[in-house]
Length: 343
Image (cartoon, rainbow, N blue to C red):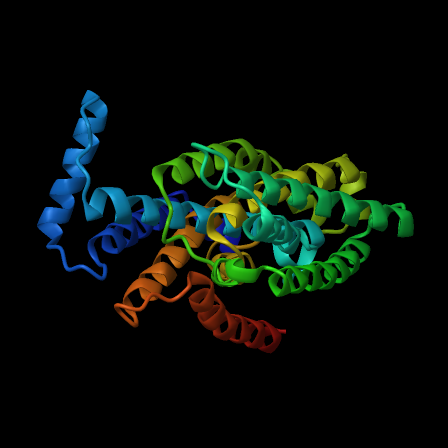
């Protein structure tokens, strides 16, 4: 009898891609301003043609607002889902994601500090926030790994999870303290903490693509090591896996990606926790199939969440983090119940 992993064929990726593309087009067409689908596609075609020919791209709602936002949402969703799948495989814990590790909250500390007390860099909007978030993500990872190493020389997954949870509580207290002294910036900080990609630009899209190409490729290349972790660290060592090196490489790559995502879209919860679960039910636990599928499913999930955030209470726009947390909580309870029932 074939497992789900063995039964999944490459044609499945094509189906994932078609669904993601259909959702992307839907999200660009639908919005608070009603624009016919024909005009939307014409605007996108003209923008692409002018970009290829080197001609100036005319400003419009579709080209200047919706398209960069939808692309950024798709890339953030794909990145968070990929990171969640990698963390769950590394720690062999279905409840793990970047927030469990403390990296996401650490990156949030850096971004919040800059939003509340930082200064603008001329010509490089959001550059300071991004650099601060990435720096604090790496600092958080360094602290977590150092403390874990001091407590447990083998860097066991249970120790890393425990230290990560403690660090998350500590970082959350710092964020609350920053909000207390944020003054007139408190509204900006609080709204950013709830997650939003309303102000995403093509510059952000390019940054996300670059980060995903570099660090995402590193994570995808570690699929064999993640599969080995599934049978235990001792067994992974016996089949030739350098356990410590694999942990360092994956955690550093995840930290870099989380830092970029947090700096651009704020803290968006449940994507890295729920989406890998849902994807694993379809493609199986083999990370060579699971991680690429997480890219498509994460992008699709977050685009649909953003579409609801934009249109559900139109003209009021909800923070995307509110939508993902609301639906993610119900999805997680369902998945947890189904998993427990199956045992």
